Image 1 (cartoon, rainbow, N blue to C red):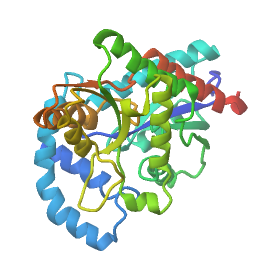
Image 2: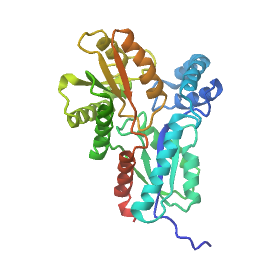
Image 3: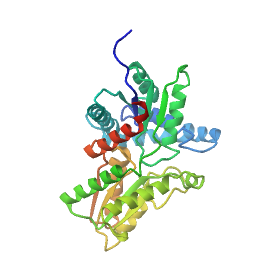
Image 4: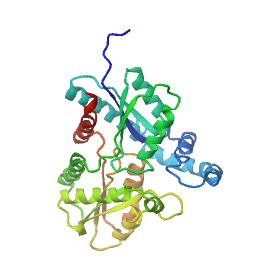
Length: 333
C-alpha cells in the first residue's frame, strides 16, 4: 500500500461543453448529446427525436461549425482553453491557501472531458469526497441541474460512491458581483463610459420560468447588483436574454431586439455589452454577442459597440472560486 496520504477532498469544476473540433461531424456529435438532454429541451421524447434527428442534426451542424471555426484558436475551443486555465489556477490557489495539494479536475456536462472521466481522474488520486462546482453563477434546471443529473448517471456503475457536496449557485457572492463590476470599471478606465450598458444573459424558454425555474429572476437580481456597484442610473443600463432556439416564446427582453431598438435611437450611440452568466468566453459571447449583435446594433444606426470579456481566469475570479471551495469544503478538513 502507498504511504502517500489521501487528499481530504477533490474538486470537480464543471462547464457546459464544446465540440472537439470546428467541423460538422464534431458539432453534430456534441449537439446530439446536448439537445437530447431532457433538462435542456422539455418536449415529448418521440416528437423531439423526430425533430432532432430528422431536421436539426441534418441542417444545423454545418452552420454552427462555421461559427465555431471563426472563433477557434491555436489552443482549440476558447471555452475549453479558458476552463483549463481556470482549473490550473484554482489548483495552484488551493495549494497556496490550504498548504496541501487538492486535486482539481475539469469536466463538461456534454462532450469531453466528461463527468465520468473527471470522476475517474479524481478517484485515481485517492479522492473519496468530491466538491462539485458548476460554473453557472445563476442556477437553472437547464444548466446546473443538468450537471447533477449527468453526474448521477456517471456514478451509476460505481458500487462505492464518493461523498458529494454540490454548490448550487453563487450569484449572491459579493466577490462575484465585485469581480463583474471591476471588470466593467477597468474596461471603462481604458475606453470611457458608453451611453448604455447591457448585461446579456443566456435565455431560457418563458415556459421554464412559468414552471418554476428561478434563473431569470436571479439574472435580473445580478444585473441590478452590478449596476448598483457601478453607480448607474436606471436609464443607463438594462438586462436582456440571448441565444433563443426554436419558435416558442423565451424570457424577455431579447438581446438582439433590444440592440436594434437602441441602435435606432438618436440618444444611444455607444453600447457596451457584458455577459455575467458565462464564466468563460465561448461561442455565445465571442461570436453571437461580439459579432452578430454588434452588426445588428450598427445596422440599426448605432455608432459604437463593444463587448467586455467574461471573467475568465482573472485573478479576482479565481479568488472567488477558491474561497467558494474553501468555505464549502470546511467540514472535510
